[in-house]
Length: 529
Image (cartoon, rainbow, N blue to C red; front, top):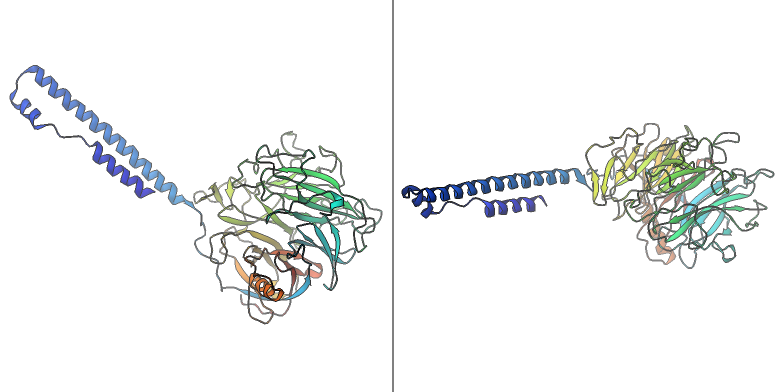
């Protein structure tokens, strides 16, 4: 682009340069003493001089414009981390076992999104994005369908077309197995739905109104029963969605909050920016809308605008006296909050936020934090879908920037990259994982770590890989999925769609959407750090 602009300048110089005076005119100046002819000649000279000055001004302006364009181009990049993540340095190998298999749905592998431990009934729960929710015994031997969110008699009409839509997440109330408590038997599903007839609680003010995302509460009569035995769900919250991608996110209760603590029984909700690309509706920084936010609500309360859930008084904007800010907001400026989790040692809340076209990020989340989107993409000023700015990196002290981030242009990744996580491993069963913060790239299935007690200050320099080894050599999760696909008679998967999950006794599970297999990390491999 810069060379084209300079070529234009050369053409301009050649076409606009002042022409020499005609020879006849020079002769007239030399020999004709008539006053009229002299005035005519002088006027011609003045005109040529003025044209020359005007031409040079145009050239100077054009040159300045070219220099500005070159400078802007030099500061824009789609690859802010040109030094790649090391492929062999610091690699950790970890053993795994195939813990459980989830049934196909409609002849296709389960689209597993989340696994949750429910200690009261000593079971694990795992969902398929198309609606089924399964329970798994602690030894992995028994898998039972507990509930189908998409069963016709519930009328939910789960919208699960495409890769991103469906039952985004679910959460089990910490009082699920405590009779006589308000949360007894209650679990929650955060799902996309094609049923857009009910009026939404929130609308983004633009877009195509493709579908809705709803928060549903289910109440089991006998929580320990093999299958759900309660009635139809109660709808707590409904968001109109402007576009068909990154609409929901993760939901969870804080597993570290004990009964009586301020955070106990409060539900955290990841609400993405509504899709398309670049946050075209500007919702991420708009504190009057729930999109592009992490929300925190009391699902058993009633002081929300619709009266179906509560807004905790401790939320950062609940008592600010500004009617234009939502009390539900806990943090803002996120694009697609796929996963968050808490460090059991210090209570740190980490969030994996999927980037636009340049940067994937993991950030600490605190009450009222602004994570920057769409003014910032990671540590860099967001320009547009062609790239980010290299100027003034991490330059706004009011923004919470990532503790670790990585660029989407890396030989480890596929054409698309997207971060997932986040789990701080504080167990001792697998020594090489001790005190590491685990996260990954879900399309490629790459698993990464950084030190949980010495968090980086952004960038990808501290990132190192984790490879899986069951005795057949170190492999990525995608390589294992493809091997399993061959055993199953399926075509090898093109991507992994990795998700992490925490279980009892510091167990770490790996989920995916292409072979129905839940893998458990186990002791036995040695580190090479």
